[in-house]
Length: 170
Ligand SMILES: [Zn+2]
Image (cartoon, rainbow, N blue to C red; front, side, top):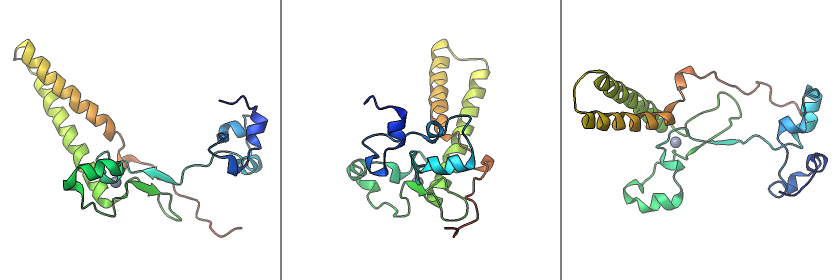
């Protein structure tokens, strides 16, 4: 909001993070200046990548705000492993789900929705039913496709991004 020029924001310190937004790395390192030495020099001035990402399971109990959790008493004994977020690992593959329970729930719901969508799509593709009935089934299909948009991530298709193996060079 403040009319700070790019140089000013480039020199802003980490302490000002949150007050004066730090530039994104692509702005801190404009096209034509993108080299490893410049990247290293710019990284400290640019907004850092998050070390924490939300769990990709839309139904993850850990993703609900604490206030919402206390309202629903049946979900009170929450599994402490379902934290709702994934931290960038020190080594190995980064995770996409906060827990194996979330991965299983995601896989299950994803598969079930796909089957539901196929079943309703087949029903619509077949003749019969009044206009009103067909509209109703179409709406149910649309609702499930809408839900499916939350399950576009296919864990089986992911290209794993691993942190570089080196660790210890100071
Ligand atoms: Zn989760």
